[in-house]
Length: 197
Image (tube, rainbow, N blue to C red; front, side, top):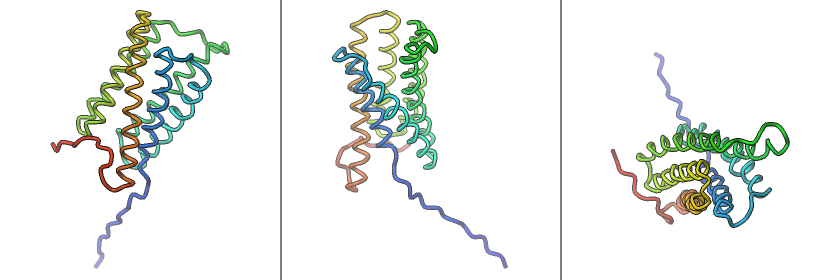
């Protein structure tokens, strides 16, 4: 008599989300300190965009795939490539690869990322409240940047910078909360209560 056996595979991978949230958060804060007109766009932001905001998040997205997390895979991989594409937009005209983007094309670029982020925001209603605040602030940031780009308003651009600092800070907080809460085995940094459906 043949018996059916079930193979149980235990997930031994570390949670990659704190790394991805930190990559997104730190890079977003630094870029938006620039957007708030406190220092110029320079090599520091470009390097953060390529490596920590870009490559680190892509790696995290691949790790989230291994953990069967579709949201994490989609968000981290997409925003990782967002950072790399943004740096390419800045640098490609400087080396003569392509022409500098127009205000209209950059407005569409920022707007479509805002629409994408709005879909991710809708998915966060099944998550901790802190995630809703984060993705809501991402949507608002893209909206403000798109408006600033199409209107040329320095005031709205600075406002976007200040809101972006808040957005990035939220991502850093959530990443560190996940890390600390897991490390200590209890809630050290609250993320809010997930409501049961």
